[in-house]
Length: 92
Length: 383
Image 1 (cartoon, chains in turn cyan, red):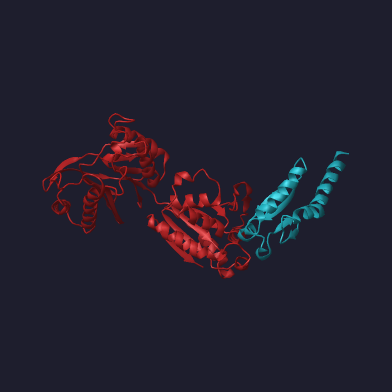
Image 2 (image 1 turned 180 degrees about the vertical axis):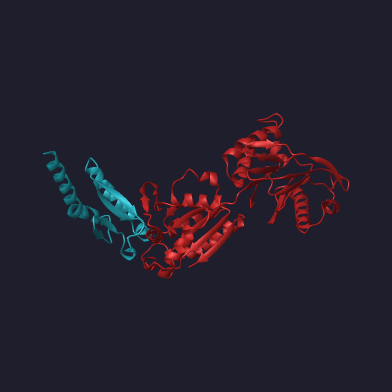
């Protein structure tokens, strides 16, 4: 399962981590069956430039809810597609 | 054996009265001295009689004066009621020594309840006369798991002429307490629970002042709260080792702090997103630690919970959010140690943030004061 980690430490939380999580949840719901999971983290050591989000090894800082669709299209959708391709090749 | 004698009081004023005619005085310092008095009548006059009785008796007993002298002095000091030509107020005196030997003296108050686990125990009382007043005196040993409840007659008469023909009554209250003792953990929940029911039996209009003093004897509970990373990173290992080795329960307040503990112990932190609430970050989990939560926002919510008097633990235990769980841990503990790191998170200094995150230290100090007022042993160490 693909994991997206959103920081919910004090600084990121105050900078709107819950709105970012909500946005990711909306996208996840729109996809039908669960394609990725949203996890929390208490600190990613980027407190001054939160909200911090991690997809795979990639870290995004200063994420706002408006950035979420962009991150999804550029970094998460390719991962989902790659995972789907792997599954199908396995079926064959 | 080192036991905690936890004492809590809850009171109800007679309907329409501003002052309670029952008074309670508690002193705890090696010895636990509790004096409860019900002044004749109600309102101001009763309050003066009762507070004179409790204040004098508690002060003299603390000073180690013999009981006969105490009762004598109280009797000769109380003002005589113009209407009834009487100088009178009831009293119950309970003294528990450092060896957990209890001495109970009761004069015209309902008899105290002694419980062991969820059973009532009969106290062997002897009639004795002190300066012309016949009192009931008893000596007994208390142990881990015992509890005592002192009530004024306002509790006994709850519901009189309404829900109960003759009031709630001693035996029924005893049964109620037995059930409560097996359910409620702390003295405060017992005292407040009994008063709540008393008020309901009076249908919200108490016909008399009502007072409950609950005492629970049990092993002391320890809690250590680690909040904030040490100012010098070189201290991390030492502070974490000290924290992990502390007795009783452990709580970590702060994201970065939890990561430091995870790094030093090798136990990862996981965040439980389901515990996130409006404006409150979620809690986490870590092996060997009872609660992991975010720092300053959670602590300021806890401070809010304690603002108008301490919350009741029984109202918090079914809530899963960080502030409720931390408050519940604080309430159940007797010896609380805050280990507070002074490292400053540069992100918390930002003027863009809606609240001042640098307040943590002050919030903790304020919380320590309130916990102290609740009779808890609080210690604050900074690193």
